[in-house]
Length: 123
Image (cartoon, rainbow, N blue to C red; front, side):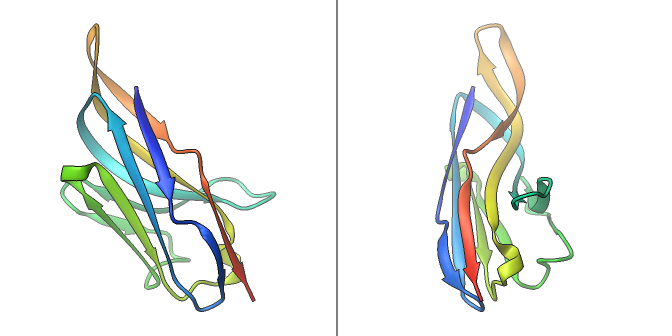
């Protein structure tokens, strides 16, 4: 299978910045999309940003202009630069990756999630 390991969460004051990283490992053939989702207490998990292997990015309206997603295909790593953070950005942030990997029966698709990293923005 494919494992995702996130890092970079923490506590920051409103207006501050954080950078999240997520590295994928395993018998990866290719990664089509990598993205970030978040889930605040009592809320459903929501898309924050997603990026394709060619670099096309899409953002939730609530973070457009403040967050930037990028990826390093050679390292199978995706980043989320978060600027001008607001208290409403407080949530657990999850990394997601979709693509294909080797298994003993041949190629197979994967849709993997990281363990989540807490981002807390104080007012």
